[in-house]
Amino acid sequence: MGRLTYEGTVRAELDDRVLTHVQVVIGTKLRRNEPFYFTWQGDVSTGGGRTTVWVHSGASLVFWYYGGRPAKINRSWLEALMRTANSPTGLQIVAEPPDDGGSPEALG
Image (cartoon, rainbow, N blue to C red; front, side, top):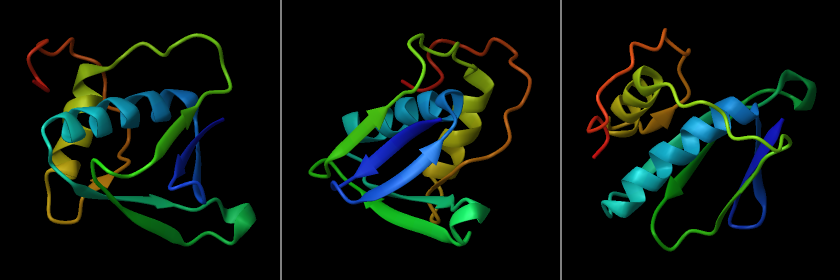
């Protein structure tokens, strides 16, 4: 399990594979100077619920991975995650679709 830490205090525990894809989407949005909301579900063991943060270029973000090797990128999943990030409700983790290879230009 990896960890995303926002502003030094808010933490999301995510599978390394999920975190890799979330990092690419967040990086893409911030490179474009596009702030957005990011919402994730809390683990049931810690009471569940959900957390939403406003991600912007001035935010402090740390991506920590348990594993040493980067995950293979699924273009289809990046595109699905990016669609949520571009919506009014912001980035939400969706199920990983089969990888159709996608186009390298998909995220810009």
